[in-house]
Length: 203
Image 1 (cartoon, rainbow, N blue to C red):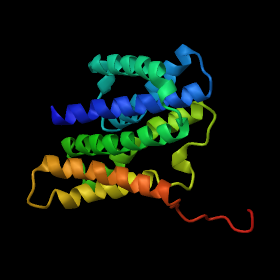
Image 2: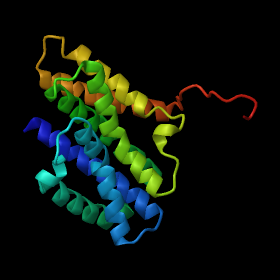
Image 3: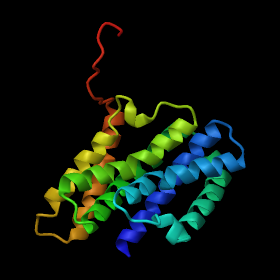
Image 4: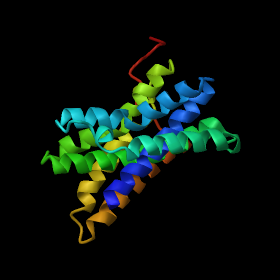
């Protein structure tokens, strides 16, 4: 139940980030729903295909579609209260990657994958919904820019495998890793931390 709740919270966070991008692009209602949908389930769909868990999770359980529909309605209704769309987008996107990284890692552990593969699966789960969203909205995906994004997922995922070795409830290690991912990402945005630029002299 705990892991399912985290999955649903991640779905909500990413659906809201999708709505914010779609509304910024002035898409119609159908377009807003599609962008919210692919943002929320894109990474999880790729994850399930990679580990052979088919049909993918949102085809098996209608709660995901219902959650996305309700989230789209909520976000459209209250978007006027989100005065700073870019800030709100960054926040919900950050919450989403924190939650979904750990959902992906848990799926990897259930499939008996090695820790490094679990981290990769968590990063894919967290990142690729946003990649699809940005591509459909004619943006360079944030994961391909110099911002700390996927790196936060990797660091947070690695921290989980360290925390889980400590004498604590695994749920605390799981929650702690989520918090660390969110903190890594927020600190990177706040202090403009970025990966090194490989280009020199304007090339």
